[in-house]
Image (cartoon, rainbow, N blue to C red):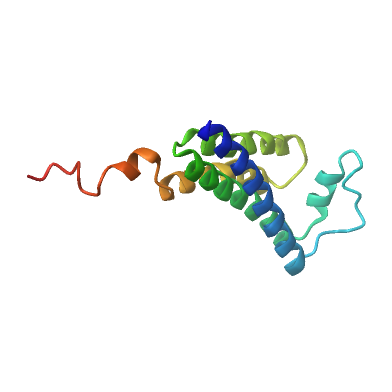
Length: 142
């Protein structure tokens, strides 16, 4: 039950982090507002016509979403798999960027960014087993 709660909390945290970074990025480097994101292919056109600074902020939003979502999920659940599920699903969804004519560096970053965010979150947040064991308990010292 904790894992499911962590997964749900992580999804909400990931969405909030992506929106926050997106809003900050739009403040510093606005995207093309004349493109309708609700139209078919509108999001791809929006990203294509965005400046390089805006595209970098989009990648940062995807990375931050995976980082914050995975960290929140692992901290609530106490195990790694909910965080990796969030990072993996985000990377899988963003792999669709290979179907859109986006810059290659953005397509690669769309997949590697969320996976890197998940890895960093997994390394930073201690799991339930690590919390129970005192530091240095398994170092082999007598």
